[in-house]
Image (cartoon, rainbow, N blue to C red; front, top):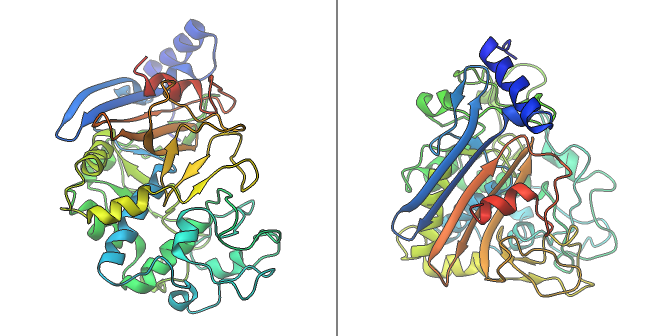
Length: 387
C-alpha cells in the first residue's frame, strides 16, 4: 500500500474525530437513480482514493460484489438464446467430468439450479482457486455438498456455484470468462466494465475506488492508477496464455469480481426496465426474474431473512413470510435486483417495474455488524431510500 499523504492523514484523523467511528473518513458512497430512459439523479460523497485525495464520482468503478451474479446471468441467457447453453441440461456435459452431489449421484446438476442457489453446493472456507489449480478439486471435497437435500429441493446461497457456471460458459463458448462477458454483455451495452480489471480501459482503472474496511485498513484495489500486474490469484507466475478453458472458472471472480460504476449499473437497470428485446428476448428477462424459489419456512436457508425469493441470480423483495426481513426500502413495494457485500462494500441494483424506476448504489468501509430495521445494513437502507 502507498504511504498516506498529510492530506490523507488529516482526512482520517478528522473523520474519526468527527464521527467517533474508525475508518469514517475513508468511506465513499454513491447513489444513482434512473428510469427506463435516463439517469434521473446522482450523488456521491467521500474519497475514491484517500491517499491522493481524489473524490468519488458516479463514474468511478468499484468491485460491486454479488451484483456480479446478476450480470453473469445476463451472459448465460445470451448463450442460451444462441443455442450454446441449456438451463436444464446436466452441466457435466460441458465440464467434461461429472458434477454430482455424492449423496445423490443419479441426480444431475443444472445451470438453473446453480443460478438459483439450489444445486446443493455449500461454500467451502475458501472458494477462490488460484491459477494452476482446478475447480474440480474444490467442488469434489467432502463437505462441499448438502447431503440432506437433493439438487433442486433446497435453497442455500453459495458463491462457489458461479465459478462452476463460468467454467461451463468457457467450455460452451470457447473463450475465457472475462472475454466472454466483454463480448456478450459489456460491448453490446457499451459499458467500460470488467471482471478483475482485465478488460477495462486504462482510464477506468485510473478511477478505481479503493476499498477500505470500517477499521480504516485497505481491503482491495489500491491500484495507484495502474493496471494490476496479474488480474487473477496466482501462486507462482501469471501465465494466462497456458490456461485451459473450463479448468478454473473461479479465476475472474464471477461471484463478485465485477468492476463497474453506478452509471454502468444504471445502464443495466434501464435495459431491464425497458425490456424491449434489443439485448435479450423479453422471455429471457422473464426467465431470470421468475421466482423459482420462495421461502415457506422449511424449504431453504434465508440467510437471516435476507433471501426469501430468488430467481436466476435475481432477488425479489419484500416477502410476507415469518423469518423474512427483506423489505429493504421499507415501503412494501415489489422490487427485483441484487445486493452485494464484500471487502467492506455494501451495494445494490434494484428496479421497481410498476413505477418504472430503479437505483444503483454502494458504500465502502461499512461495519460488518451494521444492521438496519431489515436484514440489510443501515447504509443500504439509507441509500435505497435516498436518505
